[in-house]
Length: 75
Ligand SMILES: [Zn+2]
Image 1 (tube, rainbow, N blue to C red):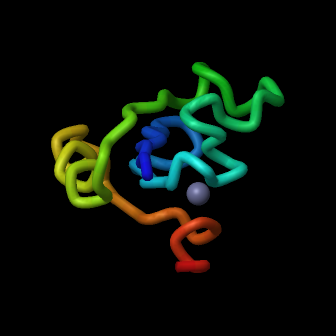
Image 2: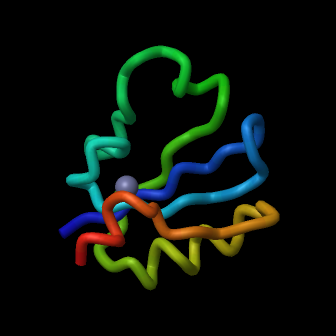
């Protein structure tokens, strides 16, 4: 299992942790629909555990670190 962080500084000042399999993450590729590309943020990862991703997210100096409501809710 792999985890990724999406760091966003345009829509909101936060870092969101995703499973690689999440459709919003797509193994760090995102949705590939343009509007959510590099202009709005960037992907970090992969990380082997959610703890590791959480620790990294904490070093990005975003106001908020969150787990994706889509992929983490299902587990
Ligand atoms: Zn997700």
